[in-house]
Length: 222
Ligand SMILES: Nc1ncnc2c1ncn2[C@@H]1O[C@H](COP(=O)(O)OP(=O)(O)OP(=O)(O)O)[C@@H](O)[C@H]1O
Image 1 (cartoon, protein in one colour):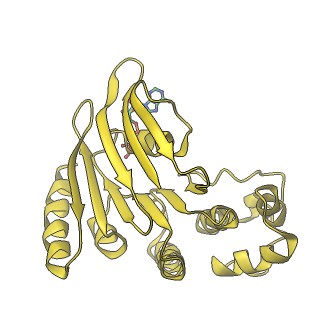
Image 2 (image 1 turned 60 degrees about the vertical axis):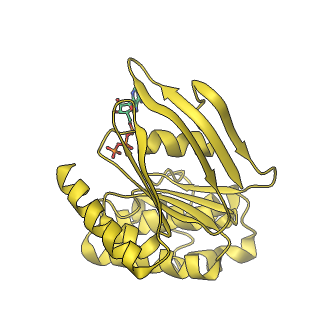
């Protein structure tokens, strides 16, 4: 569904070295790496929100629909949740079920400022789902949420991934346990400019345990 061959030079330094990657349907990728290593920059390039400095660029299937959950909710604050969802193409009759899927039933007439951080992030996830994405990009979806709200969002996401087995996901996280729970492939970015230090497929339980151990050690060093 997606092939990229990119490098990215910011100001004043090179952020991403040359990366050549391919993402196929159903892949659940967790992207880890130290703060500032370029994880968000890479997601932005994949989403088409940034332009690579060199390489052959990003080739997406012509019909690929991308949903992007940013670190901030980026809902329009003067519009209700219903209106925010309809602005990206949700049919009026689908709004309630989209909100229901992220545990926000009955909140269609709320404004974003009337929601807690966790609710606003789930509303932003509903907006991603409204485009029926083939590829879901998540930038630290569980950051800054308390344990209960993070768990509620994890549950939403797990249910969604189960419902849509063909949907691919790239999720930035600092949490090795989340990578173990959600991913069937792990990318680890590090260095300056960043290189892909790891590209591991997690096919067996043993792979998972070993990868979690290594990621946990790496995370301690972050
Ligand atoms: N708006 C910007 N202007 C200039 N440089 C930027 C900007 N945003 C990011 N950078 C640079 O790009 C580097 C990579 O940033 P990026 O946000 O992609 O890292 P990250 O791995 O997602 O970090 P974190 O884990 O802290 O979110 C940063 O170290 C910073 O130097």
